[in-house]
Image 1: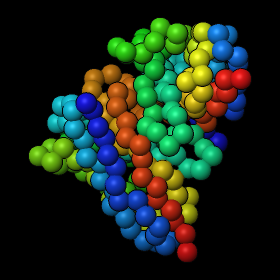
Image 2: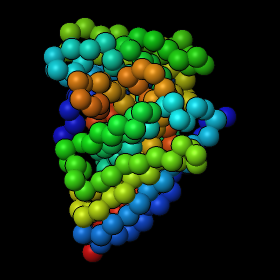
Image 3: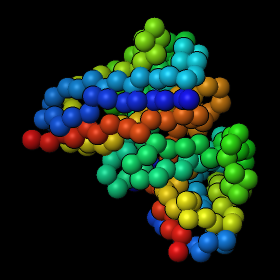
Length: 109
Length: 117
């Protein structure tokens, strides 16, 4: 069982927006502004999408955005595209390590 | 172009040993913290071990005393020596690089470790 809780799957149609939640505790998500999100296509390396809750690395589309409220972080993808179909992982720093969610499979209908 | 290429994964019997390697290129390896993660079939990612740029090492409780992380900055390579392997160590093992923040900038595709008799 993963330390952070994500929905196993979400889906949306092209052009729509979806949000993936990531719920932890005050010891991880709620205690630090160190939530990151990673996109992973099957058989590929994870790719950094969001760091420090809401920051995008250079080169990542502004269709991806992150936020946090209390112990729950969220990743929103707007203007869904076929290539967004992938697994999405949330991650939080704790005082001694990093913890992850179980991953969310996004299906673009 | 940044590349992280893991190797060394294999089928090994319970109680056996394996050494994974991760060869890095395209970024400043010596000034980056290098981390091993794993992903068991159908599960989420799990942090395994970190080698700091200054040489400090950290381990998840689940592998402490069995796994050893090391790095060779002259070869831009990080290693994971895995001893006393158990069935629950079966996973794809990824290496990742962290430059400054509390997040992982670059990842490798992973190498599969299967522990089974």
